[in-house]
Image (cartoon, rainbow, N blue to C red; front, side, top):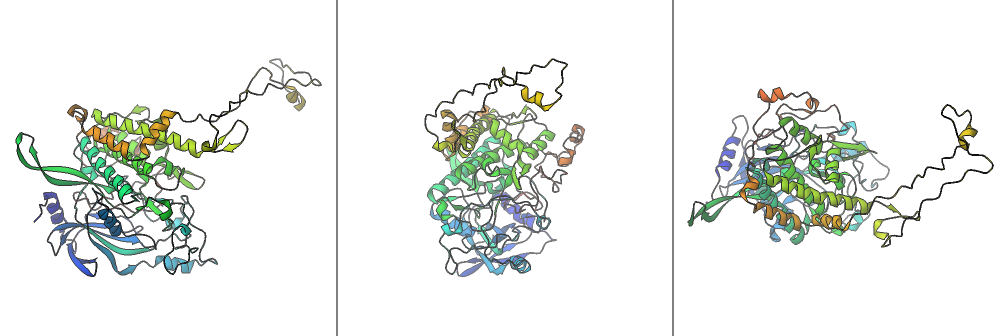
Length: 588
C-alpha cells in the first residue's frame, strides 16, 4: 500500500461532516464505471454562473486509495477536448509535474438546456451569425450573476483566439462555413463531467518559505515547457489556483549523517487544470467556443491591453512571474505593512480599465511593467529575504523590455516621408530626419504686428497679422526604436529557457539570500475592503482585527468604483483547487 501523508487522511476525515450527505458516485472508465466515496467538498465554486466546480478528497472503492475527484459542468462544444483527454496526451508525451489521470467521463448525457431556451426566446433571421468578436464586451444587466471573489481565483472573460473556424477541419456533418455556436448568446452549453486524479495536493499558499515558492513555480515552468515542446500544448490559464504543492518521499542522505541514507520529503510543483489547453500550432486551434475563461489577475499586460489575441509562451511565462509576486507580497515579510499589502494587491491584480467598450489592463500592473519597478505610492517593495528581491527585479526587467519591444513592433510608425508602415518594413538604416521647415516670413503686404504689454487685440485682422518668427517649434518625432540590448532581454521570455535557468540558479544561492523568507501567514487584514483603503486604521491592525493566519477575505469585495476593479459581470468560474486544508467557502 503506497504511503499516505497525514494531511490527506485528515482532509478526508474532515469531509465526513454530519450535516452533509454521503455519496457513492460513479465515474466512467472506458466501458465500465468505477465507484468513489465522497462527502463534503473541499472546494466549491461560488454563485450560480460558471461550471459549478466541486473538488473532493475521495476514496476509491476498488483500490481503497485516496484520490482527487473533480465534479464540474464542462464547456460542451465540438472541438473542445475534455481535460482527461488532455491529461492522457501529456502522459503519452511523458510531461512531468502534471496530474496523473485515473478515469474520467461525461455523466449520463446530462447537458444544460439554457442555451436552447435562450435561442428560442431570441430567434435570429441568420441562424449562423458572424464569428465571435475578439474583445471584452460591456456586460448587460442579465450577465451580472455573481460578485467577485478572492484575487487568487477569480475567472474573468477574455477574448478567444482570433481564428476563423474554417481553419479547422469541420467535424462530420458540420459545414466548414457553419459556426458551432450562436455568438450572440450570453449562455454557454455545459455537460456534467467528472475527473479523477491520483494526486491529492496542497494549495500554493501553503508554501513554507520563499525559496520553496520559487522551487514549486520552477517545477511548473518545467511542466509547461515540456508540454509545449513534447505535447505541443499551451496551458492558457496559468494562475495560483492551478499551481499546487505535491510532497513526495524520496531516498536520500541524512543531512545530519551523510553516511546514512533514509527517506526525505521533497515538495514539488504540480501544474493542474488543463481544460483550457490548446495546440501550440495556430492552424490547429480555431475558435472552439464563444468565449474563453481565464484568470484576470495573472494574465499578461499584452493580452489585457489587447495588443494580441493568441496566448503565447511569453504570456504564460509572465503569468508565472505574477504568481510569484502575488504570493510573495501576501505571505512574506516586507517593508509593506498589512494595509499597504492589501491595497497593493487590490490595485495591481484586481483593478482594471474600461475604454471603448473593452476591459483593459489596470494602471498599477501596466505602470510596473512599463517602468520595470515594483512600488506602491513611490514606496519601493523590499522583502526581508534578499533572494526574493533579486528574483523579482531581474524578471520584471525582462518583461519591461519585452513590453517595449512588443508595443513598438505592433505600433505603426511614421516614416520621415509621411508613410505609415510597421517597424518590420522600415528600411535599415532609416533615412535621416529632414531638418525642420524654416519659419514663414512676414507677408510683405501686411507689416509684422508688435503689441505693447497694454495693447489688446481688437479684431481678427490683428490676430492674423501676428507672426512669431523667433519661435521654432520642432516636429514631433516617433518613439525611439528599442535598442539591441532591449531586444536581447525581451527575447529571454519568448521561451521558458531563461526563466528555468535563472530560477535553478536562484535555488543554489547561499542560505543568507533566503534568510527571513518564511511564510508568515496571510498579511491581508481579514476585515479589509476597498471602501476602507484609507480609513482602515493602523489601530485596527494592532487590536487584532487583522488576521495573522492564511485566511482569505470572508466575503466578496464590493466596491463603489466598478470601473476600476475586476469586472464582476465577467465569468465567475473558479479554477479547481486541491485545497485540503482551506475552507470550502474559500473561492481560491
